[in-house]
Image 1 (cartoon, rainbow, N blue to C red):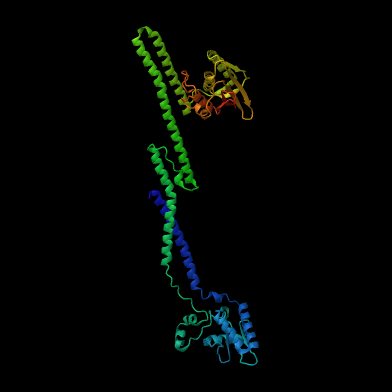
Image 2 (cartoon, one colour):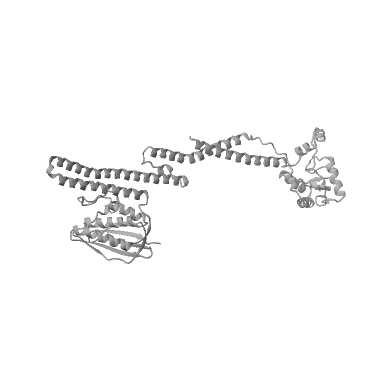
Length: 479
Protein backbone atom coordinates (compact mmCIF):
# COMPACT_ATOMS: atom_id res chain seq x y z
CA UNK A 1 0.00 0.00 0.00
CA UNK A 2 1.44 3.36 -1.03
CA UNK A 3 1.31 6.69 0.72
CA UNK A 4 -1.73 7.80 -1.26
CA UNK A 5 -3.69 4.78 0.00
CA UNK A 6 -2.95 5.63 3.62
CA UNK A 7 -3.85 9.28 3.07
CA UNK A 8 -7.20 8.29 1.58
CA UNK A 9 -7.72 5.66 4.27
CA UNK A 10 -6.99 7.92 7.25
CA UNK A 11 -8.99 10.81 5.81
CA UNK A 12 -12.08 8.71 5.15
CA UNK A 13 -11.80 6.84 8.44
CA UNK A 14 -11.38 9.94 10.57
CA UNK A 15 -14.26 11.63 8.76
CA UNK A 16 -16.51 8.63 9.36
CA UNK A 17 -15.34 8.32 12.96
CA UNK A 18 -16.00 11.97 13.77
CA UNK A 19 -19.39 11.84 12.07
CA UNK A 20 -20.26 8.62 13.91
CA UNK A 21 -19.18 10.05 17.28
CA UNK A 22 -21.19 13.20 16.68
CA UNK A 23 -24.34 11.38 15.65
CA UNK A 24 -23.94 8.80 18.43
CA UNK A 25 -23.46 11.50 21.05
CA UNK A 26 -26.57 13.34 19.87
CA UNK A 27 -28.62 10.13 19.95
CA UNK A 28 -27.26 9.23 23.39
CA UNK A 29 -28.07 12.66 24.82
CA UNK A 30 -31.52 12.52 23.30
CA UNK A 31 -32.09 9.06 24.71
CA UNK A 32 -30.96 10.08 28.20
CA UNK A 33 -33.16 13.16 28.13
CA UNK A 34 -36.15 11.11 27.12
CA UNK A 35 -35.33 8.47 29.73
CA UNK A 36 -35.05 11.02 32.52
CA UNK A 37 -38.34 12.63 31.64
CA UNK A 38 -40.04 9.51 30.36
CA UNK A 39 -42.27 8.99 33.42
CA UNK A 40 -43.69 12.47 33.14
CA UNK A 41 -44.39 12.43 29.43
CA UNK A 42 -47.61 10.39 29.54
CA UNK A 43 -48.94 12.41 32.43
CA UNK A 44 -47.99 15.72 30.87
CA UNK A 45 -49.94 14.71 27.82
CA UNK A 46 -53.11 14.41 29.92
CA UNK A 47 -55.16 17.58 29.71
CA UNK A 48 -58.44 18.61 31.28
CA UNK A 49 -60.47 17.56 28.25
CA UNK A 50 -59.18 13.98 28.42
CA UNK A 51 -59.74 13.84 32.19
CA UNK A 52 -63.32 15.05 31.80
CA UNK A 53 -64.00 12.43 29.13
CA UNK A 54 -62.67 9.63 31.34
CA UNK A 55 -64.78 10.77 34.31
CA UNK A 56 -67.92 11.00 32.16
CA UNK A 57 -67.46 7.42 30.99
CA UNK A 58 -66.79 6.23 34.55
CA UNK A 59 -69.85 8.09 35.87
CA UNK A 60 -72.06 6.58 33.16
CA UNK A 61 -70.70 3.12 33.87
CA UNK A 62 -71.55 3.44 37.58
CA UNK A 63 -75.00 4.94 37.10
CA UNK A 64 -76.15 2.43 34.53
CA UNK A 65 -74.07 -0.61 35.38
CA UNK A 66 -73.47 -0.23 39.07
CA UNK A 67 -70.47 -1.21 41.12
CA UNK A 68 -69.40 -4.11 38.86
CA UNK A 69 -69.39 -2.03 35.69
CA UNK A 70 -67.40 0.81 37.29
CA UNK A 71 -64.86 -1.63 38.71
CA UNK A 72 -64.53 -3.34 35.32
CA UNK A 73 -63.96 -0.02 33.52
CA UNK A 74 -61.35 1.25 35.97
CA UNK A 75 -59.60 -2.12 35.91
CA UNK A 76 -59.27 -1.94 32.14
CA UNK A 77 -57.80 1.57 32.41
CA UNK A 78 -55.30 0.35 34.98
CA UNK A 79 -54.32 -2.73 32.91
CA UNK A 80 -53.87 -0.62 29.76
CA UNK A 81 -51.55 1.82 31.59
CA UNK A 82 -53.91 4.68 30.79
CA UNK A 83 -54.17 7.76 33.02
CA UNK A 84 -55.42 6.61 36.45
CA UNK A 85 -58.99 7.32 37.51
CA UNK A 86 -59.64 6.82 41.21
CA UNK A 87 -63.03 5.92 42.72
CA UNK A 88 -63.07 6.38 46.54
CA UNK A 89 -66.10 5.68 48.77
CA UNK A 90 -67.04 7.41 52.01
CA UNK A 91 -64.60 5.14 53.90
CA UNK A 92 -61.66 6.33 51.74
CA UNK A 93 -61.41 2.93 50.05
CA UNK A 94 -60.52 2.75 46.40
CA UNK A 95 -62.77 0.51 44.31
CA UNK A 96 -59.67 -1.33 43.00
CA UNK A 97 -58.20 -1.64 46.49
CA UNK A 98 -55.37 0.76 45.64
CA UNK A 99 -53.85 2.26 48.77
CA UNK A 100 -53.79 6.04 48.51
CA UNK A 101 -51.83 8.41 50.68
CA UNK A 102 -54.08 10.28 53.13
CA UNK A 103 -52.86 13.71 51.99
CA UNK A 104 -53.92 12.88 48.43
CA UNK A 105 -57.45 12.02 49.56
CA UNK A 106 -57.63 15.14 51.69
CA UNK A 107 -56.51 17.31 48.78
CA UNK A 108 -59.02 15.66 46.41
CA UNK A 109 -61.95 16.13 48.84
CA UNK A 110 -60.93 19.70 49.59
CA UNK A 111 -60.86 20.54 45.87
CA UNK A 112 -64.27 18.87 45.42
CA UNK A 113 -65.79 20.89 48.28
CA UNK A 114 -64.37 24.05 46.74
CA UNK A 115 -65.83 22.98 43.34
CA UNK A 116 -62.47 24.01 41.92
CA UNK A 117 -62.08 21.39 39.20
CA UNK A 118 -65.46 19.81 38.35
CA UNK A 119 -64.10 18.43 35.07
CA UNK A 120 -61.51 16.28 36.91
CA UNK A 121 -63.15 15.71 40.34
CA UNK A 122 -66.79 14.79 40.83
CA UNK A 123 -69.09 12.76 43.13
CA UNK A 124 -71.27 10.08 41.51
CA UNK A 125 -74.15 8.02 42.81
CA UNK A 126 -76.27 5.23 41.33
CA UNK A 127 -79.11 5.30 43.88
CA UNK A 128 -78.48 1.66 44.78
CA UNK A 129 -74.99 1.77 46.17
CA UNK A 130 -72.49 4.02 47.95
CA UNK A 131 -71.35 7.34 46.60
CA UNK A 132 -67.91 7.45 44.97
CA UNK A 133 -65.56 10.37 44.58
CA UNK A 134 -64.09 10.13 41.05
CA UNK A 135 -60.95 12.13 40.30
CA UNK A 136 -58.04 12.22 37.90
CA UNK A 137 -54.91 13.82 39.41
CA UNK A 138 -53.49 16.59 37.19
CA UNK A 139 -50.33 18.66 37.82
CA UNK A 140 -52.27 21.91 37.55
CA UNK A 141 -54.48 20.73 40.42
CA UNK A 142 -51.53 20.63 42.78
CA UNK A 143 -50.73 16.92 42.31
CA UNK A 144 -47.05 16.35 41.51
CA UNK A 145 -47.24 13.55 38.97
CA UNK A 146 -49.41 10.64 40.07
CA UNK A 147 -50.94 10.77 43.52
CA UNK A 148 -48.66 8.86 45.84
CA UNK A 149 -50.02 5.45 46.68
CA UNK A 150 -49.63 4.14 50.18
CA UNK A 151 -47.32 1.15 50.01
CA UNK A 152 -48.64 -1.93 51.74
CA UNK A 153 -47.40 -3.33 55.01
CA UNK A 154 -44.48 -1.69 56.75
CA UNK A 155 -43.52 0.47 53.78
CA UNK A 156 -45.16 3.57 55.31
CA UNK A 157 -41.89 4.59 56.90
CA UNK A 158 -40.08 4.27 53.56
CA UNK A 159 -42.73 6.42 51.91
CA UNK A 160 -42.40 9.02 54.60
CA UNK A 161 -38.63 9.16 54.07
CA UNK A 162 -38.70 8.85 50.21
CA UNK A 163 -42.08 9.92 48.85
CA UNK A 164 -40.82 10.24 45.26
CA UNK A 165 -39.35 6.73 45.27
CA UNK A 166 -42.59 5.39 46.69
CA UNK A 167 -44.48 7.24 44.02
CA UNK A 168 -42.48 5.64 41.17
CA UNK A 169 -42.64 2.21 42.77
CA UNK A 170 -46.37 2.02 43.33
CA UNK A 171 -47.90 4.23 40.64
CA UNK A 172 -50.04 2.75 37.92
CA UNK A 173 -47.16 3.44 35.46
CA UNK A 174 -44.26 1.26 36.60
CA UNK A 175 -40.77 2.79 36.29
CA UNK A 176 -38.76 2.13 33.16
CA UNK A 177 -36.30 -0.75 33.72
CA UNK A 178 -32.64 0.07 33.17
CA UNK A 179 -31.28 -0.75 29.72
CA UNK A 180 -29.05 -3.82 30.15
CA UNK A 181 -27.30 -3.31 26.79
CA UNK A 182 -23.75 -2.04 26.91
CA UNK A 183 -22.71 0.74 24.47
CA UNK A 184 -19.36 -1.00 23.91
CA UNK A 185 -20.68 -3.46 21.32
CA UNK A 186 -22.22 -0.88 18.94
CA UNK A 187 -19.11 1.30 19.32
CA UNK A 188 -16.84 -1.59 18.34
CA UNK A 189 -19.14 -2.61 15.49
CA UNK A 190 -19.28 0.95 14.14
CA UNK A 191 -15.50 1.33 14.38
CA UNK A 192 -14.93 -1.96 12.54
CA UNK A 193 -17.47 -1.06 9.85
CA UNK A 194 -15.85 2.36 9.34
CA UNK A 195 -12.43 0.70 9.04
CA UNK A 196 -13.70 -1.69 6.37
CA UNK A 197 -15.51 1.04 4.46
CA UNK A 198 -12.54 3.43 4.57
CA UNK A 199 -10.13 0.70 3.45
CA UNK A 200 -12.40 -0.27 0.54
CA UNK A 201 -12.85 3.35 -0.53
CA UNK A 202 -9.13 4.10 -0.29
CA UNK A 203 -8.30 0.96 -2.28
CA UNK A 204 -10.91 1.93 -4.90
CA UNK A 205 -9.21 5.29 -5.48
CA UNK A 206 -5.59 4.22 -5.03
CA UNK A 207 -5.64 1.11 -7.27
CA UNK A 208 -6.06 2.88 -10.66
CA UNK A 209 -3.50 5.52 -9.66
CA UNK A 210 -1.03 2.76 -8.79
CA UNK A 211 -1.75 1.12 -12.17
CA UNK A 212 -1.08 4.41 -13.95
CA UNK A 213 2.18 4.85 -12.05
CA UNK A 214 3.34 1.37 -13.08
CA UNK A 215 2.33 2.07 -16.67
CA UNK A 216 4.33 5.31 -16.75
CA UNK A 217 7.34 3.43 -15.40
CA UNK A 218 6.94 0.78 -18.11
CA UNK A 219 6.74 3.40 -20.88
CA UNK A 220 9.81 5.15 -19.45
CA UNK A 221 11.69 1.85 -19.81
CA UNK A 222 10.73 1.67 -23.49
CA UNK A 223 7.72 -0.66 -23.34
CA UNK A 224 5.47 1.44 -25.58
CA UNK A 225 2.84 -1.32 -25.86
CA UNK A 226 1.73 -0.68 -22.27
CA UNK A 227 -1.99 0.06 -21.87
CA UNK A 228 -4.09 0.60 -18.73
CA UNK A 229 -7.62 0.74 -20.14
CA UNK A 230 -8.32 -2.90 -19.32
CA UNK A 231 -7.10 -2.40 -15.73
CA UNK A 232 -9.71 0.31 -15.09
CA UNK A 233 -12.54 -2.23 -15.22
CA UNK A 234 -16.02 -0.74 -15.54
CA UNK A 235 -15.16 2.59 -13.95
CA UNK A 236 -16.89 5.66 -15.38
CA UNK A 237 -15.08 8.52 -13.68
CA UNK A 238 -12.16 10.92 -14.11
CA UNK A 239 -9.62 8.23 -13.29
CA UNK A 240 -11.01 6.09 -16.12
CA UNK A 241 -10.76 9.09 -18.46
CA UNK A 242 -7.17 9.57 -17.32
CA UNK A 243 -6.45 5.93 -18.20
CA UNK A 244 -7.92 6.42 -21.68
CA UNK A 245 -5.84 9.56 -22.17
CA UNK A 246 -2.76 7.60 -21.13
CA UNK A 247 -3.53 4.87 -23.68
CA UNK A 248 -3.99 7.53 -26.38
CA UNK A 249 -0.70 9.18 -25.39
CA UNK A 250 1.13 5.86 -25.40
CA UNK A 251 -0.30 5.05 -28.82
CA UNK A 252 0.81 8.41 -30.18
CA UNK A 253 4.30 7.99 -28.76
CA UNK A 254 4.47 4.50 -30.25
CA UNK A 255 3.43 5.84 -33.66
CA UNK A 256 5.95 8.69 -33.55
CA UNK A 257 8.83 6.49 -32.43
CA UNK A 258 7.91 3.85 -35.00
CA UNK A 259 7.73 6.54 -37.72
CA UNK A 260 11.13 7.90 -36.70
CA UNK A 261 12.64 4.46 -36.76
CA UNK A 262 11.15 3.78 -40.18
CA UNK A 263 12.33 7.17 -41.43
CA UNK A 264 15.83 6.52 -40.16
CA UNK A 265 15.81 3.16 -41.90
CA UNK A 266 14.57 4.68 -45.16
CA UNK A 267 17.08 7.55 -45.04
CA UNK A 268 19.89 5.07 -44.45
CA UNK A 269 18.70 3.03 -47.41
CA UNK A 270 18.34 6.09 -49.65
CA UNK A 271 21.83 7.32 -48.78
CA UNK A 272 23.41 3.90 -49.11
CA UNK A 273 22.40 3.56 -52.78
CA UNK A 274 24.09 6.73 -54.12
CA UNK A 275 27.12 6.14 -51.90
CA UNK A 276 27.44 2.65 -53.32
CA UNK A 277 27.21 4.03 -56.85
CA UNK A 278 29.80 6.72 -56.06
CA UNK A 279 32.17 4.06 -54.69
CA UNK A 280 31.58 1.93 -57.79
CA UNK A 281 32.29 4.92 -60.06
CA UNK A 282 35.51 5.67 -58.19
CA UNK A 283 36.62 2.04 -58.55
CA UNK A 284 35.88 2.03 -62.29
CA UNK A 285 37.72 5.33 -62.72
CA UNK A 286 40.78 3.85 -61.06
CA UNK A 287 40.63 0.74 -63.23
CA UNK A 288 39.78 2.61 -66.46
CA UNK A 289 41.50 5.99 -66.51
CA UNK A 290 40.09 6.70 -69.95
CA UNK A 291 36.58 6.83 -68.47
CA UNK A 292 37.35 9.52 -65.89
CA UNK A 293 34.98 12.12 -67.42
CA UNK A 294 32.06 9.70 -67.47
CA UNK A 295 32.69 8.51 -63.90
CA UNK A 296 33.09 12.10 -62.64
CA UNK A 297 29.77 12.97 -64.21
CA UNK A 298 28.18 9.98 -62.46
CA UNK A 299 29.73 10.95 -59.13
CA UNK A 300 28.44 14.51 -59.55
CA UNK A 301 24.93 13.24 -60.31
CA UNK A 302 24.87 10.97 -57.28
CA UNK A 303 26.24 13.74 -55.04
CA UNK A 304 23.49 16.06 -56.25
CA UNK A 305 20.95 13.36 -55.49
CA UNK A 306 22.27 13.09 -51.93
CA UNK A 307 22.17 16.87 -51.58
CA UNK A 308 18.55 16.96 -52.78
CA UNK A 309 17.67 14.19 -50.34
CA UNK A 310 19.20 16.04 -47.40
CA UNK A 311 17.43 19.26 -48.45
CA UNK A 312 14.07 17.49 -48.67
CA UNK A 313 14.62 15.85 -45.29
CA UNK A 314 15.39 19.23 -43.77
CA UNK A 315 12.16 20.71 -45.17
CA UNK A 316 10.16 17.70 -43.92
CA UNK A 317 11.70 17.93 -40.45
CA UNK A 318 10.83 21.64 -40.22
CA UNK A 319 7.25 21.00 -41.31
CA UNK A 320 6.76 18.24 -38.77
CA UNK A 321 8.29 20.40 -36.04
CA UNK A 322 6.05 23.37 -36.97
CA UNK A 323 8.99 25.65 -37.77
CA UNK A 324 8.15 28.42 -40.25
CA UNK A 325 10.21 28.30 -43.39
CA UNK A 326 9.00 31.70 -44.61
CA UNK A 327 6.64 34.43 -43.45
CA UNK A 328 2.91 34.09 -44.08
CA UNK A 329 1.33 36.73 -46.35
CA UNK A 330 -1.47 37.17 -48.85
CA UNK A 331 -0.67 35.90 -52.33
CA UNK A 332 -2.43 35.37 -55.64
CA UNK A 333 -2.85 31.64 -56.07
CA UNK A 334 -3.63 32.17 -59.78
CA UNK A 335 -0.20 33.61 -60.48
CA UNK A 336 1.37 30.84 -58.40
CA UNK A 337 -0.40 28.17 -60.46
CA UNK A 338 0.64 29.83 -63.71
CA UNK A 339 4.31 29.73 -62.70
CA UNK A 340 4.10 26.08 -61.61
CA UNK A 341 2.35 24.99 -64.84
CA UNK A 342 4.84 26.86 -67.00
CA UNK A 343 7.80 25.14 -65.30
CA UNK A 344 6.09 21.74 -65.39
CA UNK A 345 5.50 21.92 -69.16
CA UNK A 346 9.26 21.69 -69.76
CA UNK A 347 9.41 18.43 -67.81
CA UNK A 348 6.19 17.19 -69.45
CA UNK A 349 7.78 17.51 -72.87
CA UNK A 350 10.51 15.08 -71.81
CA UNK A 351 7.86 12.54 -70.72
CA UNK A 352 5.80 13.19 -73.88
CA UNK A 353 2.88 14.27 -71.70
CA UNK A 354 0.48 17.15 -72.28
CA UNK A 355 -0.67 19.39 -69.43
CA UNK A 356 -4.18 20.81 -69.76
CA UNK A 357 -4.87 23.83 -67.61
CA UNK A 358 -7.07 26.90 -67.81
CA UNK A 359 -5.98 29.88 -65.76
CA UNK A 360 -8.13 31.45 -63.08
CA UNK A 361 -8.80 35.02 -62.08
CA UNK A 362 -7.04 36.66 -59.16
CA UNK A 363 -7.68 34.68 -55.98
CA UNK A 364 -6.02 35.66 -52.72
CA UNK A 365 -5.00 33.13 -50.12
CA UNK A 366 -2.99 33.68 -46.97
CA UNK A 367 0.07 31.50 -46.60
CA UNK A 368 3.70 30.92 -47.38
CA UNK A 369 4.31 31.01 -51.11
CA UNK A 370 7.39 28.75 -50.98
CA UNK A 371 5.49 25.95 -49.21
CA UNK A 372 2.44 26.21 -51.48
CA UNK A 373 4.64 26.28 -54.56
CA UNK A 374 6.54 23.20 -53.39
CA UNK A 375 3.35 21.32 -52.46
CA UNK A 376 1.49 21.87 -55.77
CA UNK A 377 4.67 21.33 -57.81
CA UNK A 378 5.39 18.01 -56.05
CA UNK A 379 1.84 16.77 -56.77
CA UNK A 380 2.10 17.84 -60.42
CA UNK A 381 5.57 16.27 -60.89
CA UNK A 382 4.29 13.02 -59.35
CA UNK A 383 1.49 13.00 -61.93
CA UNK A 384 3.97 13.61 -64.78
CA UNK A 385 6.29 10.82 -63.61
CA UNK A 386 3.51 8.21 -63.50
CA UNK A 387 1.48 9.32 -66.51
CA UNK A 388 1.80 7.14 -69.59
CA UNK A 389 3.63 8.45 -72.64
CA UNK A 390 1.35 10.42 -74.89
CA UNK A 391 -1.06 10.86 -72.01
CA UNK A 392 -2.54 13.95 -70.47
CA UNK A 393 -2.37 15.57 -67.05
CA UNK A 394 -5.24 17.96 -66.28
CA UNK A 395 -5.24 20.66 -63.64
CA UNK A 396 -8.73 21.96 -62.76
CA UNK A 397 -9.57 24.64 -60.20
CA UNK A 398 -12.94 25.28 -58.56
CA UNK A 399 -14.30 27.35 -55.68
CA UNK A 400 -16.38 26.33 -52.66
CA UNK A 401 -18.04 29.56 -51.50
CA UNK A 402 -19.67 28.00 -48.44
CA UNK A 403 -16.45 26.47 -47.12
CA UNK A 404 -14.40 29.41 -48.48
CA UNK A 405 -11.90 27.07 -50.09
CA UNK A 406 -10.09 26.83 -53.40
CA UNK A 407 -9.97 23.29 -54.79
CA UNK A 408 -7.18 22.22 -57.17
CA UNK A 409 -7.66 18.81 -58.84
CA UNK A 410 -4.76 17.08 -60.63
CA UNK A 411 -5.64 14.03 -62.78
CA UNK A 412 -3.20 11.77 -64.63
CA UNK A 413 -3.51 8.79 -66.96
CA UNK A 414 -1.14 6.52 -65.14
CA UNK A 415 -1.61 3.09 -63.55
CA UNK A 416 -3.18 4.48 -60.37
CA UNK A 417 -2.52 3.24 -56.84
CA UNK A 418 -3.82 0.23 -54.94
CA UNK A 419 -6.76 1.17 -52.73
CA UNK A 420 -4.88 0.02 -49.64
CA UNK A 421 -2.02 2.41 -50.46
CA UNK A 422 -4.06 5.59 -51.06
CA UNK A 423 -3.38 6.98 -47.58
CA UNK A 424 0.14 5.57 -47.33
CA UNK A 425 1.45 7.46 -50.38
CA UNK A 426 1.80 10.57 -48.20
CA UNK A 427 4.28 8.80 -45.91
CA UNK A 428 8.01 9.50 -46.37
CA UNK A 429 9.86 7.19 -48.81
CA UNK A 430 6.70 5.32 -49.77
CA UNK A 431 6.66 3.93 -53.30
CA UNK A 432 3.78 2.06 -54.86
CA UNK A 433 3.64 0.14 -58.07
CA UNK A 434 6.46 1.18 -60.41
CA UNK A 435 9.67 1.37 -58.38
CA UNK A 436 11.89 2.03 -61.33
CA UNK A 437 11.57 5.79 -61.02
CA UNK A 438 15.14 6.45 -60.01
CA UNK A 439 14.63 10.20 -60.00
CA UNK A 440 12.05 10.00 -57.24
CA UNK A 441 13.32 10.48 -53.69
CA UNK A 442 10.02 9.47 -52.11
CA UNK A 443 9.49 12.65 -50.06
CA UNK A 444 7.56 14.83 -52.50
CA UNK A 445 4.01 13.84 -51.52
CA UNK A 446 4.93 13.73 -47.81
CA UNK A 447 6.14 17.35 -48.03
CA UNK A 448 3.05 18.32 -50.05
CA UNK A 449 0.72 16.80 -47.46
CA UNK A 450 2.37 18.59 -44.53
CA UNK A 451 2.66 21.88 -46.42
CA UNK A 452 -1.06 21.97 -47.23
CA UNK A 453 -1.92 20.91 -43.67
CA UNK A 454 0.20 23.79 -42.35
CA UNK A 455 -2.14 26.18 -44.22
CA UNK A 456 -5.29 24.64 -42.75
CA UNK A 457 -6.08 22.77 -45.94
CA UNK A 458 -6.18 19.13 -46.91
CA UNK A 459 -5.00 16.83 -49.69
CA UNK A 460 -6.36 13.40 -50.59
CA UNK A 461 -5.86 10.82 -53.32
CA UNK A 462 -8.35 8.63 -55.17
CA UNK A 463 -8.37 6.39 -58.23
CA UNK A 464 -10.27 7.62 -61.28
CA UNK A 465 -12.92 5.25 -62.72
CA UNK A 466 -11.36 5.56 -66.22
CA UNK A 467 -7.88 4.91 -64.83
CA UNK A 468 -5.18 7.03 -63.31
CA UNK A 469 -4.81 8.88 -60.02
CA UNK A 470 -6.66 11.98 -58.86
CA UNK A 471 -5.22 14.40 -56.30
CA UNK A 472 -7.60 16.90 -54.62
CA UNK A 473 -6.02 19.88 -52.87
CA UNK A 474 -8.15 22.31 -50.81
CA UNK A 475 -6.73 25.67 -49.69
CA UNK A 476 -8.66 28.23 -47.55
CA UNK A 477 -9.27 31.73 -48.93
CA UNK A 478 -7.58 34.73 -47.37
CA UNK A 479 -9.53 36.45 -44.54
